[in-house]
Image (cartoon, rainbow, N blue to C red; front, side, top):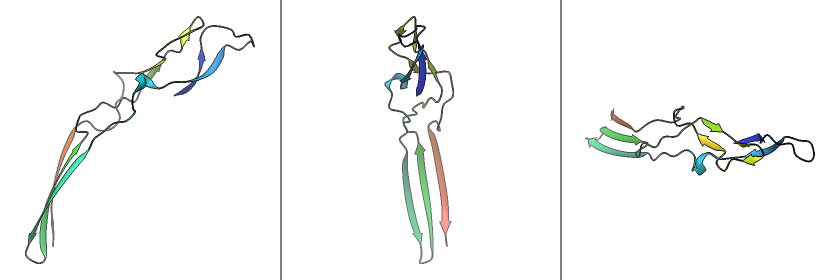
Length: 105
């Protein structure tokens, strides 16, 4: 996240803000482990069926989308300037199971 930080101080050149970048909570970003298994069954020469199981976000990781920022005040930078909003929006699906059955002729 890139922004301009205002620490409440005036710098020697007269400016009050400096460019700054931060990453929430030193996290790795979006995480999701998805698994899929398929079983095919042949019925004669021209027909077959399949069963497919998908598991999305196996570990049910929360991928927070919103963040809060507090760069600091009174000329003192905050050591953790950007944090995720743990009551905010979540992006991506929660743990999801999906079963698909199909036939081919």
